[in-house]
Length: 274
Image (cartoon, rainbow, N blue to C red; front, side):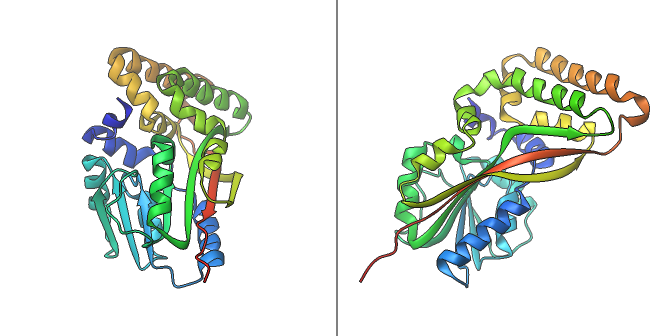
């Protein structure tokens, strides 16, 4: 059911508005890695599970051509409406069966996505389409969230994390990859030249409205909403009230800091030897 949720137009718009964007530190890490392994110029990047195109657009400034691939037409429609870069093409395609030639791609990127794939089949497909010496970059933010604001930091952090834990039961299998901090993804990469970095910290300014929006942008909340809409809406109202009880009217709309840890798996396909 989760995959179907991403094809819902209403959810695609919520996801585009509220989901945490691809980490700038992760982008820099990927670009440094690709330059070290392949050198410049950067030619073709394929962003699989591209969703509404946030990571696709971040890559576009650095590559001659970027293809964003996703199985959701509604996600791609939002991506197209938000894209002004003329070197981006969006295609409707599963990550496990890309309409690309063998040995044709410089880098395959998946941001907040690979834990949704049939990982074994995706890795086989990545090995097929990557050029010899081509790179694989797989990243996500992790279930390690801390909120900082005045002397309320611990309480605010607990409220948010308790809310996420409450709805996590709606997609236990997918969350295992995140709980392992992408160790399971790292182990599945078929190339020997690979590394995993799992302590990448990003700090984002947020309000309570942003945090509630982020919860709504999580697929696990959307599955909750599908299963019991009344209960899900009451749950969100209760989280809102808990934040209000802590912050009071004066600070309810204040800007706080959310600290998120990211993991990134990087790998390089072996080069051909003469």
